[in-house]
Image 1 (tube, rainbow, N blue to C red):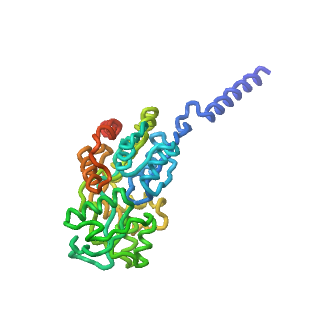
Image 2: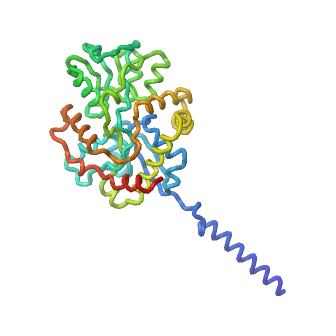
Image 3: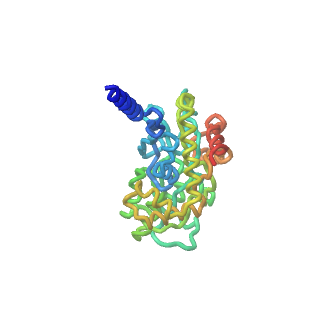
Length: 338
């Protein structure tokens, strides 16, 4: 009887131990990840480090679970942030400038930079190995949304080469981002500005040919950054720090891996694009130094972007970048993450 009581005691201890492990006691791996609702401006290979951070488990290492949605426009991303339906947005920082100027009390801050160049390419209907911007005089380009960075950069580059947008060069700006390639294939316009993988797909189909890189033509800009409402950052500094850490780790991962390895890592986000084409796209982006190698938002480049926006007539004067940029999280990441 005494032995039976001992065995029962042992079994009870074992049972409680197992129950405790099942509830997460003493087992860090069972800790629940914190969900972050992330809204990206469009779905593009241009944002490769982000998809790497998800698929390589880098966000999970930081204790975060990403719920990803696509806004289809910087204005839609900003609406999602201001309405509280998204926690963090990925878009051009011009949207934060517009909101700040409008006097929004809980305005949006930029805290981590992802890309440092325009990621679009100008495609024509024929190969032009000796392309000159003067070739666009009198032609029609399918451009982007008025007030958006892609369209403003396009017009800025045209002006830099002595061409007056909408006068000496016709630009179509009333098409949805997802409809421009189809319109071009259908015979609309002489040129089209497209991001990857659309640009390479048009080339592969013989429907268009890259004649110029908008990223190389316009120089370095804080083209796409991560942003959040001021109140969200104040209330969730640990989340923002972990998020920034993950982005920096992904930037380093991308630097240290080949285009094919990057393509294989992020292929699940672009299942309709074969690995070979995806690899070509990444090689093209790598060759022109598209991605930022750290998440710190460059204030000088931010002011250069404001010059582009002022030139486009969207704002009258620049905003002090210190009002809209918070680099403390990025600085901590670059100091701590090895």
